[in-house]
Length: 420
Image (cartoon, rainbow, N blue to C red; front, side, top):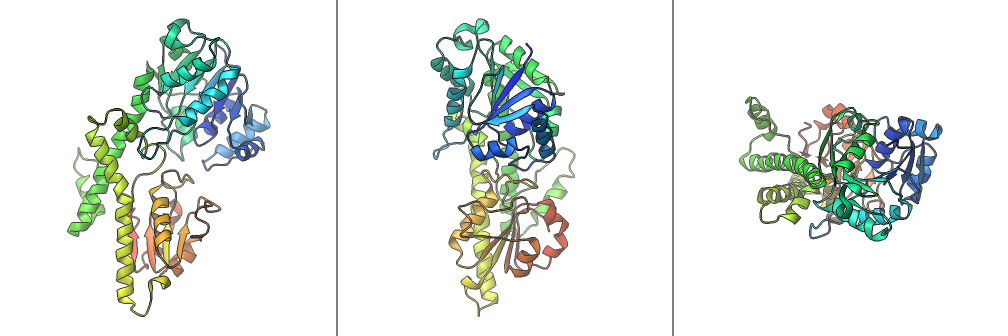
């Protein structure tokens, strides 16, 4: 089937690059987002997120007339849903965004259309999406009731890209295609082959959903081992960075680097989707999540100890006179994404409880989020290093690595990334 018009629902860190790549292949793309500000920025040929080279691709796509953003879905041949899938306070998956997106495109669906759920989702979410669409459009048939003869084709095709390398990995990485029927999978492959150079591997929708969750849970377990090891080494007065370097010289050992926790919308969230479905079986996955969730609290305790030691060494000062500088807010290096960021959590908790001044250095954002503006000061590297009594490295941005020698002069340094 020739895809004349493609619609991408959700123009965030995955949706916008995906829309831009389709448009770069001279396909008409309609991007849909509830954020009017984001829509206006995109329609000016600009971007509202940080991702290398994306600005040039979006500018060209908009200028040439292949990409247009709007707040309301319009008819298309294929719809890709790339909206957030957070969890609730009890770690239950929140499918509210997927439900809203499904109901928003339902009125413009027509026979022969393809709907793909790209959002990372708990097992069964694609079937639930199809059920919502069927309920909204009883005049059309769907795979759960009509199988291969359905009017609408449904598939789950999770992204597997690294922030900072999204454009490259969208094109080059293999793609798991989980159609609700073989015909659904075949149509989804024909869509992705417009730009995907990697292999498109067919499975069913549930396995595709579980595949993405498994990939991120595997990484979460490995990171939890490194984070737990760092806390053990701190207790035993062992340099964890040296220890890992030595252990990794074994030909079959590859321990990851510890950090202040785990962030982002994938690794910090996806394992809970498995736990929510199979709580009795997912014991290791749950424990890894608990270890990684506890690491930020451990870092905060280290900060409190550092402040106490500083005051002991400087008895003429009060805690209100102690200035703390936090280096990094993003959930990983060299991006502006603050979602589920342990660095953000740690910095905010410090600012909420420390009576003195708290500064933050985050080279990838221009302004602080509204909930931080009154309690934090956004400063540059030089100002922070010159002013701070306590220095905390939370993210190893390239700017910090390039200034690594300057951190060595910090008398009270908490380095959660092994920068120094």
